[in-house]
Image 1 (spheres, rainbow, N blue to C red):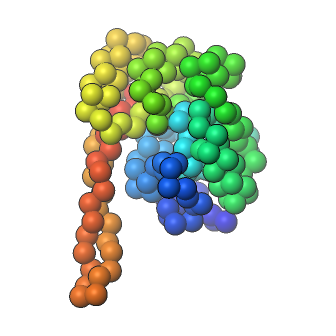
Image 2: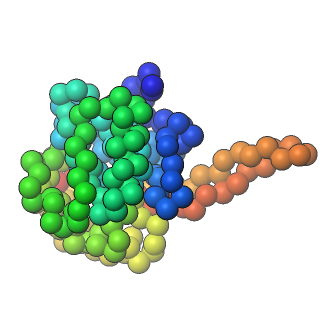
Length: 196
């Protein structure tokens, strides 16, 4: 379905559900690039929501790589499975459950993406530090200022280097009866770092 190696699958190609979040196309592109994925990598997508990051990551790591998608919401898990099937993705394992309990069972990762976590972002980041291979990348998307502050504090205390903070603010065009207007989306702040 998606014939390109570059990330940036348009949002409208994904199946959507009102109550299940999706990481928007342009934010996904930045997050995937910050993950520095390569063929054969092992990746976690924690708080996978609609599965959009999982689909993009699966394309990047190829058939020799593996993505583990985790979400506590059964609706998110079903939607992720639907999107993985739609895009013909077979190198993703979808896991229903609390990431705090499921991470310990997973193999060491080359990259970990952390999205919606229901307020457990700091604790999940601590757990993930032990699951990342040396030189592995962690990428955390935040919306709330409080989450950003807490994540920056824990990332600085753990064995991470090359800490980068990027805020993405996107406006998308929309046709109106008199022309085209730009509609702003909520900003997302992305923290990325390398395990030393």
